[in-house]
Length: 254
Image 1 (cartoon, rainbow, N blue to C red):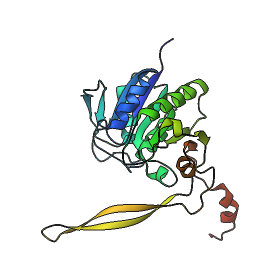
Image 2: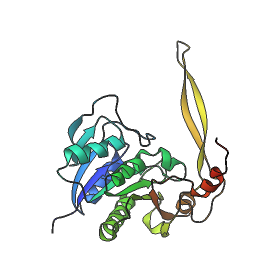
Image 3: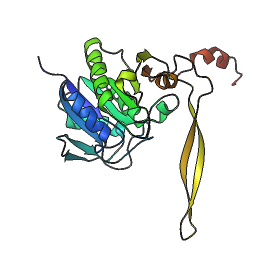
Image 4: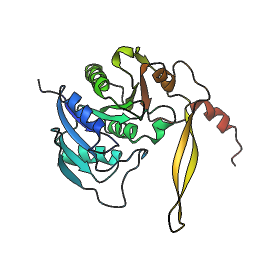
């Protein structure tokens, strides 16, 4: 029996520590193909490139990782990998490991999650993996957890158009409380702009944001991670607000 074909992508670029860790973990499970943006695309969401042609460049890193850098977004990388670089559709797609959690509203902005969503568009079982925290990141535990989840998906499969969004607390594995099935929580961003002025008096601004969680509950993704659980959220692309359809139908739109 042939080993599973695993497509590895991310939004932090092919040179990031997170994709190296994921490649090391996935190499123990199957045959890996790494295709990722050449530069960082954090917060790119599901953007695609249509204003210029895409190109790929073969990259060989000292750690042994060999893959392709694409001059586009995470979603571009998945499209390019499946349509151009790979001989056949992969058995599974794994996106990450992203430094920083993707929970609540951040799921919509995340290039890591969007790469996995692009995989579902193409009929590939897909997983997005993030590691909470933006300080000292230790990928050792997340590598072990990633292997367990990927093996489970390969064994059990996923429903059509459904991806798994995994967020791992950045704590020692022995302190983790286990896995918790969660829903997308209520965490949202309140934006602020930090003004910068250069020597010529030209103004520019850095976008920064605070996290807010107005209605946290025990099965929210962000709450589970804060409590030391590995959050597993099944996501799909259907965004229709079905509970509002009947009310909307009452509007006089003549």
